Length: 155
Image 1 (tube, rainbow, N blue to C red):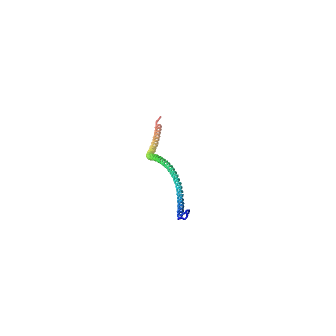
Image 2: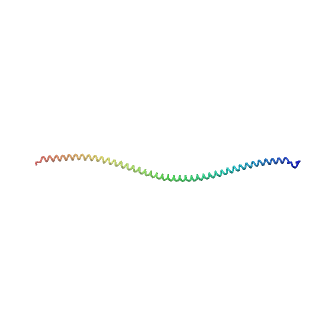
Image 3: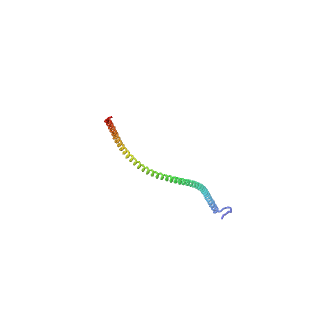
């Protein structure tokens, strides 16, 4: 036991030192926990801000996606219309080619008829010329006979 009342026993000093060390350690751990809490709160705020930005970007991208989808549908509609017109034009082209082929056949037939008629015309013209020559000869013969007769007749 303590010999003097004013003296503090050794175990009290040890217990006090342990309490001080424990208090310092707990205080240090508390400061670390507060710093970690502050860092976590800052990170949480940054995450919230990032989430809000991501949400805004997501909404903006959603709007752009809707616009792109609308543009795609419009383009598909125009493509279908253009394809329809192309099909119509191709059908018309086929019809026009068929008509052109028919006209070519008719032109070929007409050219053959024209060539045949031209040949017949030349032949007929040759016969006309022969007949004209014979007619001229006959006229000349008639004129000659008339002169001879006129010369033989006494006046």
